[in-house]
Image (cartoon, rainbow, N blue to C red; front, side, top):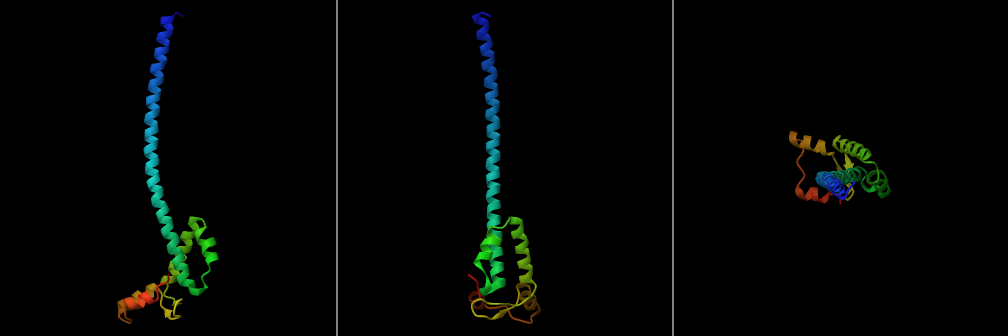
Length: 140
């Protein structure tokens, strides 16, 4: 093979490699865009998970009051598989909404469950608690 043939062959290879490089750059850009989209979705998922964890912990603390154990929160809520936390949160929410009475951890007063309070208030049998009363019984 003479020099001219080698030059033409190398130029053809350069053209093919340049095309492949362009295709690869397009694919890299597409993948970069997908990563950006997935990162945004992951951020939303992380935020949702944090909200559910906080809500589950709050529900647990409302149900248990002073008997709430930090070890349980750390082990069974914060470090549990998320599917388990969703089930626990649902259970706790149902228990809170069942109308059962629970005790204020600050003053010991018996407080009706959330749903029972709303239904009783809607029927007019009881009054809505004042803002001061609600503030006094908040769990922090």
